[in-house]
Length: 509
Image 1 (cartoon, rainbow, N blue to C red):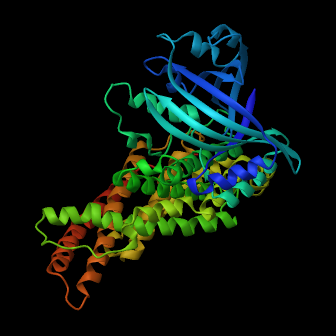
Image 2: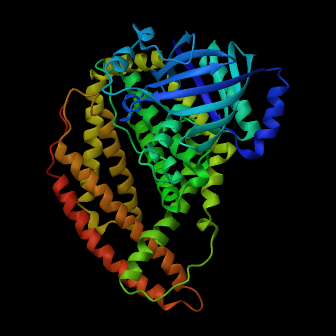
């Protein structure tokens, strides 16, 4: 049967007070010892299936879980067992039986969890929610990871009740929204231990990049929007949790930089998705959208500093720049990004955006499609193609004048290129037409080239500030000269790419 739940990591500073709050609700205490199974080649994990045996207060229960229809949903099938042994035949009739019955290798225990759970059911608005506070360990091969989670599962009622209760607990105790399951975290640990060497636990931090957008054959705009938004939010929330969640203290500097970068990519993709679907689903006007832009900028300040210090400056040193002591700044403090990611403001925004993605107004969307078609005579697909071609033409026309654009105009063009590229990806499977592969490839190349140019502008501004000091370091003038020479080369390269893009075929409705 399907289950819908929200999960949060509990920061160390909130555990005692949250425990007291849960205890005051007269919860039931459970002792849960679970063993998770997979093959040596991780066939179940690759199929996104989790299989476990769990002792629940003395009763063994076999459970198989798999992703559901959306970010919140899980398929779950439970079967009581007389002892701690698997019975795959009990899963006949479930969607996962075929996967389990066709494994190429034998199942074996790969990791286990030992959890003390405090659980209580709460009536909230029109829903009943089971709140569970889990404390314990996740264990594999002698390595243990702590578990400190608060789960809220919707037992009955509507999704808004689940989110309203979750938001209350999140804001009061500084909880971090976490999309990883115990099984996902455990599989990552078990995979690290397979070669027998002492594990590098920083590998528990997984950088979430953009996923492959896949739509079903119905071509329904509302479902397509939810798929696109869902992937964007997965990218944002998972990378935010990587910065602020339970394993965040393990992150290396390089991982932290990548987490911030991919978090911001996720925000750009989300905003591009809102823009693409705006004629039918005007989601970008919410207060959360405006506030998310503010956090995007705050993370961007740290990202700019990382680019200067860890990308451009090493290249300058390799080119012969004199030694330079970088001025101290709070942007160099890794705790800054972690604090931003963990902030109650951002976490509340992410929770609300997740709710909005699951409750898109399908009826209003269909009515909007019908109204637009009645006025224009166009189908939704034709409108989307026309919209993408318009953006493509705007980008090409601006690109033809690239050599005379100001840095600010080039930055604006870069944002339009990103929006167009992401929109191609969002609509690729939705439209009954193939996007010109040449155009998509060129857009990716242009985006990267413009990104490099933007990094050079950022570095130029940084070193110009050093050069404006009363006693400017010689390295500052060296850097400015080298950076401007690189800008000239890059501007020429970008112009050539835009020239090639102008020859690309437009989309056909």
